[in-house]
Length: 310
Image (cartoon, rainbow, N blue to C red; front, side, top):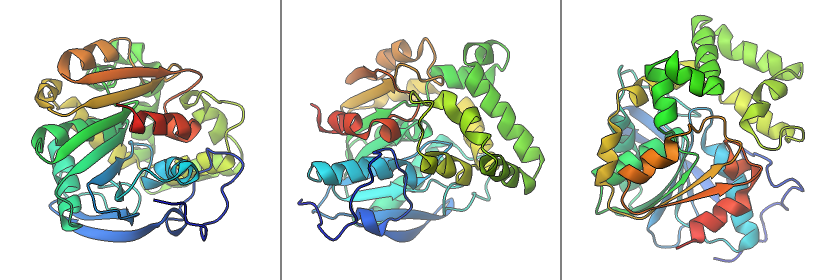
């Protein structure tokens, strides 16, 4: 697919996050699912299969905007895009049901894809999105062609949720974020406002900097997006779903899985790679230097390399 010359010129910083879906060749679509209406940005049609982009628990579809922009610059190999706002994030409402399981989330994603006319798909998941992608691959083995993971939620995070003292001590930055989300949830509607206020006075960037390898030169749009995407109730819903999930289900993945993590990712536990390797049959792992939890934001070209790898 050639680059669309009508799209705006790319910014100098490849990590810039944008909510301008039209500039990326996408349009907004809302699909009814068992968890309620799910909003996605879809487009760049080339006849299928779909490329389903699944964000993490501190994001929305915009997490993938640097990747899609880098893809345009390279020559557009990421086609038939469905960039999902998972239930409870972005423009998708928090599900009324509680608890919500990982299976509920993956089923909603499959419903969206089929509603848009796709019978097969490739899954690209970041953090929580990686968790959902692996579950969906097990549930839909015929439809799922491949899974690409970027810093997927692993055993370290799961144990930090299940065992706050022991597991949290091994992943202190995640334990701290989980505690912060509980405090923000206790504030009710004032919680997100507090985060936005911290951003306005310049305190959010240093608080979020451990999530990135490039800690001193984050583009303002990245911090603004994190502030806008804070959803304490959704984060805690996802944490409960992850804690209740049996990771051994991943033994049922039948497609190739390619995984990239950053060497400075504070949400990756010491046993994550070994456990994932033991569970997922056709897995290849790669570690990206000088990178934190958001490789698709910090180094979108490297994630594109993962996407096009064997």
